[in-house]
Length: 116
Image 1 (cartoon, rainbow, N blue to C red):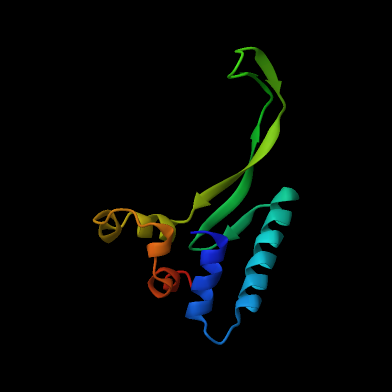
Image 2: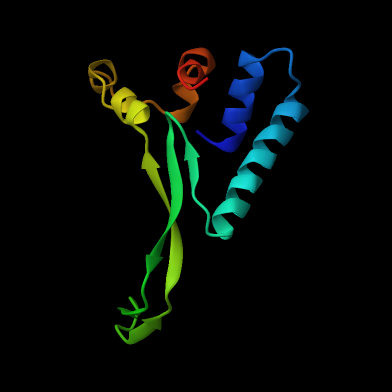
């Protein structure tokens, strides 16, 4: 599901809200989450999961084209850990009986009700 598809699904579910209002809310939420992670803080959304940063130490990699060693600096990478409810929902018997859906196949109502 893309950000645009999420916005459209929320607009369909909450008909009293306009597209621009939902678009702004989603953009503000994502921007705030990005800023929080950039400050090194953890984000926890109960029932859904948590976002944090994992440290990757410096290492020596290889240039895939030439095979030459390349020094890679230390960095922090975003990490998502799903919550218990999300893990259970994803691994439920019902969801395992079906092939994975394409993003456009999800219905706004049924897929947004559980976290809401």
